[in-house]
Amino acid sequence: MNTAFNYTSYVIRKKVLSILGAKLHIYNSSEELVMYSELKPFRMKEDITLFTDESKDKELLRITARRVIDFSATYDVYDSESGEHLGALRRKGLKSILKDEWIILDSHDRETGFIKEDNAAMALLRRFISIIPQKYNVETGNVTIPVFSQNFNPFVTKIITDFSEDRRGLLDRRLGLAAGILLCAVEGKQE
Image (cartoon, rainbow, N blue to C red; front, side):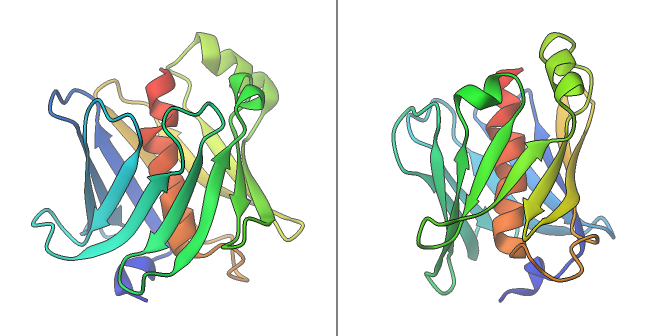
């Protein structure tokens, strides 16, 4: 596995105002760029590729939607170096209207966990007051891990991804980072 996936915490940044598509920069806790992606505008089907840097010479991870325009979309996650299908992330469509929720699937589409907004009351309030940052927990193996939190900035969406509470390594870092990317890219479109 590439060393870019060995860090405990990451910051995923997406500039909101970009006509030619958003740019995602993923930094480690030392503020070093460890991954980069460009989101193409007006895509009917999401296809996100993570590279080691802005040169886009080395591909690390690929996230692809299974269908075109799907309210309960499923995104497959692949390790680009090995070609391994790591699993998938499925958005719970109708349930996510009030409180964002995703299902974590293994490579055989078996449920292994969930990603849920931290608090139902706050989630509902966030629907009307968009400046309240979102926070997400990962539930897997009967353990709840606070992994994702959003910082409010009207020009830059920033998701802090912290795996330090996952001491047993229940969530594959690559799948966890893919989830953070989707929370930044897909959930960010709701606002």
